[in-house]
Length: 118
Image 1: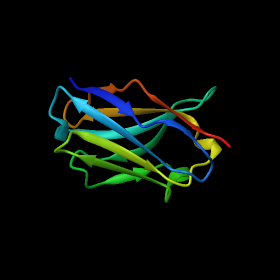
Image 2: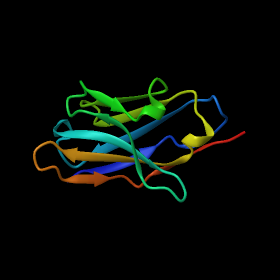
Image 3: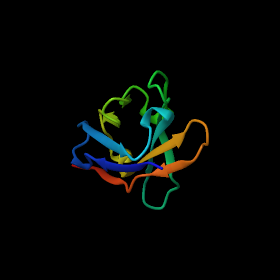
């Protein structure tokens, strides 16, 4: 089992940047692929970014490609989401998700609010 704690959310103006972090504990972090999801009010939860267990492969939803970067640190047991050129439509609660590479058990953080507004 792994515990996940997100941080780094907040209020930012359009065009600004934020860096979300997710700290993991309780299990062998290198065995988990990681994902960032987001959920805006009245909408379904959306997969935003993926990174493989070794950190070597990434993927993004089309709407954030070129603006967001996901990275995984298997020494510090963290995953980050660098968000640049933020838009009002990026406003959502962002969730960190860990999925075990063998069992596929999935764990969630508590979420962090990102608000993009002038």
